[in-house]
Amino acid sequence: MKASLDVDHSCFFLKGNLVKENISTIYTQIIQHLGEVIRSGITLDLSAVEEIDSSGVALLEEITSQAESRSLSVEMIGISDKIGKALNVFSLKEEPAEGKILAFRESFMEWIGSSLYQSWERIKSFFLLLVDTSLYSFQGLFNRKGMRKGEFLNQSMLIGMNALPIIALISFLIGFILALQSSAQLRQFGASIYVADLIAISMTREMGPIMTAIVLAGRSGSSFTSEIANMVVTEETDALQSMGLNPIKYVVVPKVHAIIITTPMLTILSMIIGIAGSFVVGLTYLNIAVVPFYQEVVEALIFKDIITGLVKSFIFAWIIVTVGAYYGLNVKGGSEGVGRATTASVVTSIFLVVLADSILGLIFYFG
Image (cartoon, rainbow, N blue to C red; front, side, top):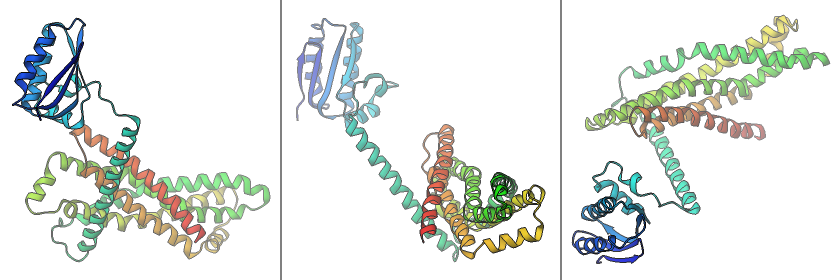
């Protein structure tokens, strides 16, 4: 399709294909009309342009240069995504898109559609990664080929042993504070002994698993993301692929195995230490002896309470490691992008952990 030009005062309507074969005539026409412009600027309307190549981009830049030499400002409007990409690719100026393409704005419905499409693409990518990770993790139990030797033990130490002090401290303080706050009310009814029941059930069902997961999301999840993101930025993952190694199996799977093993163990310790924190309150503030407190805890807990906490910890571990790997593998930009990905990973992990806890709580409660 040939190119054509319509002029309405200071607005130039370009139509058709701005390609090498058509630009000479269009250029001559525009230069002639530039001398007739009496305003301080011109507008180039590209909404009817169907195709553009490097010659067409050079034409637009030459028109802009000619107009500016005559003290006329230039504004381009009606830039489609296709034309905008061509301008970004072929322009010789440093900021072609931001500098000249100012008037193109998405409508509200376009913004909604674009946001929904991008969200769907991210969700689809996340679940594809989840499936790949699950498959390679299962295969890795029987076939260690393509995995780094000794990485499982290394990750277990980093995720499990190194996280134990902070989890133990937080769990103790949570149990201590919960017992202290609840005991003030229970003492009014002579039911101080039921502090043991309250803390035992809350630590096993809720507080132990979710506090452990939140600490791991902030500590280990951020570490996963930053490590993988740095590998992507420095093209180490590309180097692994060039050597015939799968980055997910080589980097992510050992972390999956380690966090799935260590998270339930940390959760059990969190439960025990949280109950121990409540025992300190029972012994010092409520004058409850060791044996009555222990018997009350044993009588209050049932097997379902402990299983509930362990199932939650297992699912939380999958969420943390998958979210960390997703943001790490999809990082964009340099070191700044690594920081953004790490922050997004922690926020998303904590949100999904709380959401999963709510859903699982409903399932276990009504089930």
